[in-house]
Amino acid sequence: MANWKDKPPPPPLCKPDPLDQTGERKLLLQLKQRAEQLDSRAAALNRQEAELAVEKEAIAKQIAAIKPLAQKLEQINAAHKAADQKKWTALVSTYETMDPRSAARIFDGLDPKIVLNVIQRMSSRKSAPILADMSPEKAQIVTEKLAGMTAMTPKPQPVASLLPDGAP
Image 1 (tube, rainbow, N blue to C red):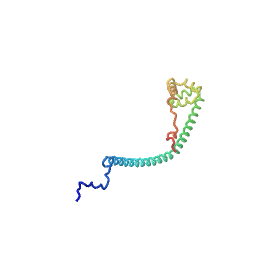
Image 2: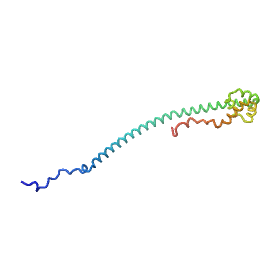
Image 3: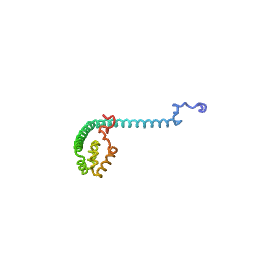
């Protein structure tokens, strides 16, 4: 028999895996896990995006349903303002044609808000004699309110401007 020391060792049947020996296998496994996590996260984001698209569509439908109501409210508001303005114009016309002393006596007994609204709509040529004949206290209140009227009165916003821009 042959001496085993004289023979070379038998060749390996398979080459050893170089990844096992260098730690690269561990790194590749970590990269694979990270890729799976990223894929899972991308799928979740895609689901959220789809849900948001559905919600956005629902909101757009709600806005579309509200817009005609907002327009109707604006029409009603405009009609109300026109009627209100007509009422005040008639009242102003009445007091402008009255004797200033008679108007002043009536204004002395009225709520300052009403007096203010009437005086504000009158020409200064007509309102000055009335203010002069009013009681000093009432004339002072009305004058102070007239002086602060423009700074305190906000301009009303149309209802449509309250809807988001680009809304259908």
